[in-house]
Image 1 (cartoon, rainbow, N blue to C red):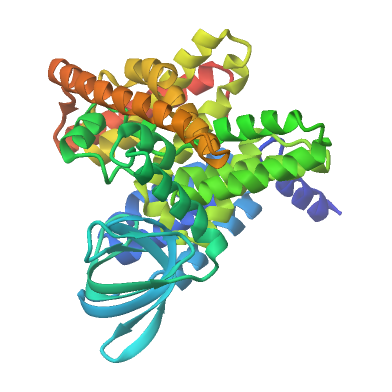
Image 2: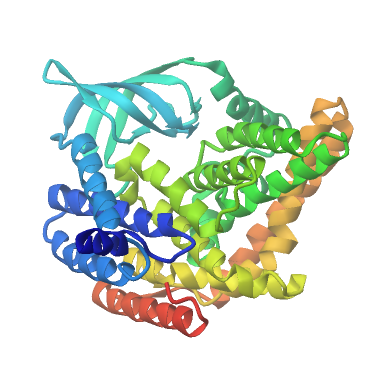
Length: 458
């Protein structure tokens, strides 16, 4: 009886978002196996971090369940991670993220020395035709040179020749339609188009570099802001059709699914879509859940479906920014619009400073204020403008679409000039690797101290 009581005490813990802890366990397990196979010496700090996290988490969740997810993460990474020597290969797989000149494929097979072998991890493929476009859902075959990378995707193929065929056109059609629409309205090389699609490959290198150095590159990748805005717009538009609550939720998710496909789909867009999908399904069955629990659950789905994604800096930045915003959500949701805009930008930027410092070794002093200004002044108008062009084109009002497209081109040109001026006045601060690493640890400590003193003990 005593043993049963002790077991019950170990299994039961008080928290509204246990899946967030289990996501951390899964990610740490996958990162540990990745470090053992891929990077020399990196497993030592991961062992220490995992030990510290389980000790801290044991107050809120069962250590047995935490360890179970940790082991599942280790097994998932072990079963999918492959070590291949660089060289000439043939590869066939499913495109998981489309693009122009570069695509990502996964769940594929690779021909090495006359033998086909499974390669489920993501592969970056640089197309032989840099202006060619491929789309999510297509099957790609390529022959070229395979090399290893230290971050996600773990492999890269410089293609000498490739070919794509349709798997299910319903998956590739959204991306094709948006690409054709942007080309028709001469928007494919504008910053406004990058806001909508997340594809910055058409923007010239100097502009991309300035945007990155200013610390606002995240605004031009499809993120929770874009997916959330689309969800709200679709849901509000369907309200005028006098549909039932459940019908509106289902239609909103279906339309959001096709928009997510049109973005590549991007990692941050996929994560946000899964969150909204879980939220909508739970709302349909009237089962309330903490937003952090939904984030954790959707994150587990992503990292289990593609374990090597834990090595993606894009996924890590996206996850930490979203988690920080959801943690501070109760403190900002009752503020006025101006305060909310300021706080959202400040919290998201502050949360990613440790990762930005340790990965890129740079710190932008203009990042937070520029984020606050550019979201309402450029990002939201550009995003809404693209939606209005899409609607105008569908209903046959091409004149209206052309007028809006001209406005977006002018806005994009103006932003390019503004970034040039600001980049010259406030350059990014660059640090040596050791200094950047120590500063990232200090900023991480300060961030968690802020969490603790604001009442967010987890």
